[in-house]
Amino acid sequence: MKLSNKKYHNILAQFSSVARLLPQMLCSTLYSAVALTGSTLCFMICCTGLVKGPLCAYKVTFSNRSQGLEWGYPLEQFSTREVNYLYNRTSWFTVCVEPHNVVLWNVVLFCILLVLSGAETLLCVVQILNGIAGCVFGPGVRNNKKDVVLMQVMLWNLQKARPLWVLNLQKLGEEEQQQCAGQLFNPPLAHAITVATCGNSFACGSEDGSIHVFKVAGTRFERQAGFKGHSQGVSQVHFVNFLSHPHWLVSGGNDGKVLLWDASAGSATVSKEQAKGGHRRKAKSVKSQSASKEGADHNTELEVIAFSPKLSINHEEKVNWICPAQLKGEGWIIVADQSSSLSVYPITGL
Image (cartoon, rainbow, N blue to C red; front, side, top):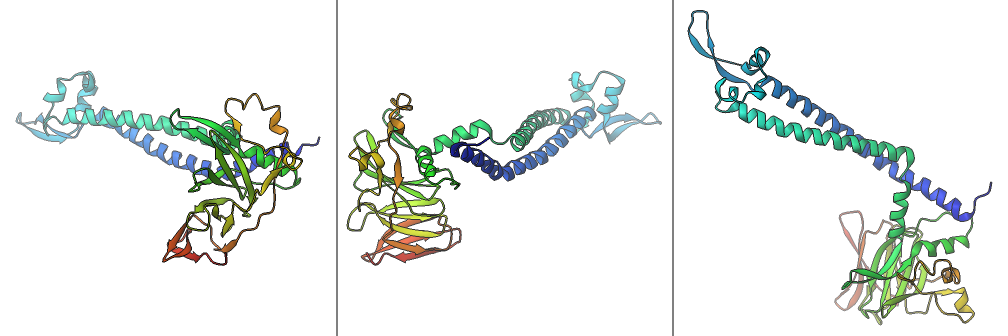
């Protein structure tokens, strides 16, 4: 039985996600087991403390018929001879002489701890069962639904609190992967997004190393450019607002590279239909998303054309954050990685 490239990729991606989440699920199960041990021990101590009662001084009659105070657990002996002291509130204030009201304090304290430890035990059991089920059966369908949400770029109407247009990066990645059979790519999760100072352009970096540039027109946006900039995920993208035009873009990736792009150098991403005179593919509207799913959604295919950066910096460490800045009239790129120091690189050769 032969599997299509799409099904084969989905199966490998599912196994990859299970292997990536397995250490986290095992650690979660281990921590829950430790917490379960502590909550069970606390529950047993509370039960013992309620049954025996507190340590206090109580009145006793000695062999010479004299009376005095003796320290011990009188309520435990009282419960064996008569009704348990927990159901006889009179004994709470008559049996123990010192400390004052120690029985009431003991009952309230251990009842609170008993309820809390019981609730913690129940939560730990549920967490352990969830971790074991995750290790055995994998993340399941819910994780796939979550990934689909993370692979989307949305244009929101903040007044109505709803998305106007949605572009699914997963479908773009699948179209590009079909042209490269036999290769496995990371799912294109959106990692970072930046807006140009002109206000009508924005860009986002994805986990597959691609950078997508969009143009906003009214209540919709179009994908203007798309280029493969990094061999690993793009962690940061920022427009540079102090160069010759507002479409200069700097990106940093997990491959340790910092790249400067000229996003205004023409549309780096074109469709096959557009090359024949058609229109560029637009992002789908939320209202028409279901209606056009089987129709015009597959009429055009976007392909990423080779696009060279204007400046390439090999930082050699995973980039966590970048900040383009103008210091004393010169352009610089400030880079933060996993170390405790910052790196500053000049913008030259433009």
